[in-house]
Length: 553
Image (cartoon, rainbow, N blue to C red; front, side, top):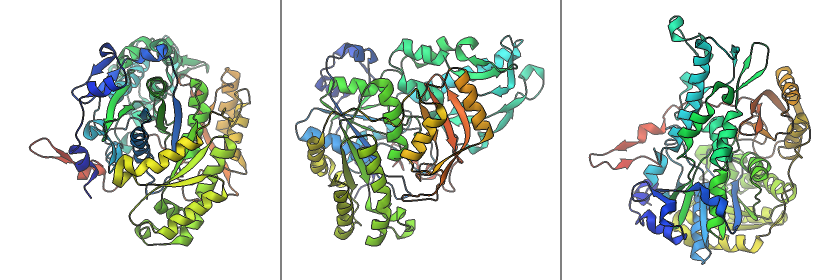
């Protein structure tokens, strides 16, 4: 089979104006970025006359074997359209390549991709650049305020705002800057986050208008004074200029699938540090333009789906009518204790053991949040009928349907069975949130830890307890909680696979994201600036004399 990028490069794309016209968009509402990309006027969400049905794609806990949420989402959207259902795909915007680390792309795979694949996985329409620049403008203005006499009485030791960049670079996690004398600023400890883990990205994804964006940016708490009072981006005077930098980025990006169906790709923070979904703007616009919307949430359902439901849906006033839970036989074997090198070897018992992870995710979505669920087995050529039958049996015991998805190899045609099952289970139900907003912050954290992760309890560090008390006193106690932990386990220990029990969640640190509107809770060792692996994806990426890129995947 051809590589992902070879398939994408041979795609017969339609001019983006034709894709836009198929949605009924007026010419003045579409801003082309070349032949195959465009932005759509975000103000259309305020004129929406209808609301389609939302379908959430999530997955079991990630493994090195891969699960395939994006591939499944793309293939499902193509399948729905093939069945005559007016369907839009609504995805997260990937990092740059994604930042040349473990993987070189995030636009689906095989014959279930969004295109132009190289553009989407590289600079795209410049949204991430705008987000990073807005973030760094605030950082520069904080340090400049201190340099210019420090009128806000900022304590340089208590600046909470980090710089960011769209690149994995561990060297920049912890730095000292402002060296070289008075003219170069005030020496202090500093650091960089990756752009998609920044609060600006989270704000960008939750904003519903330019006015809302500006208001959220102005509420960012970026530092504290010598007497412990919070300093906001509004006080620093940065909110207006930050909004100006983000103004055009706020318009959602329109592209297409390999089968020429419309797809919006816009925003996407890390699901283990922010809510892990595409923008509210993109989701609402998609719901207004189509009858069905396929969207995904990052990492496993314990992270992405929980945040999608408890944070994004609550803020946006939306709810999915069905959830697709993606699993692979290979990933289940990984959860069953099989090493990566041995995943292609048939091992029904390991599938059965690893299926405990799948069962817990089903239970959370079906019984915890009260949503209709279908399991999609993302097919691999190495799967055996016996292994697939075990997954089907496990799902039947949980009272949910299980469908083989062959979209990677067959595109929309390979997703028709899944699409038909999704259409059967669609039901508008209210979300059973994990916690009410008026619950104290500690109890909200405990609710997620015990109900979703199945921890025995939560141990708060002295620093975390102090911060939670301070935030409550400052009036932030009614915010939702955004728990940052490893994506590989239900626990905060990446090595505890499948469905661990008998563990306690360790809350190490608490951070306020006042602009985004949630409290970030750091559990275990979690990084907001990843490093590159021993052999970065960048090593395999190249371009020939004709400008044809290779190595993205």
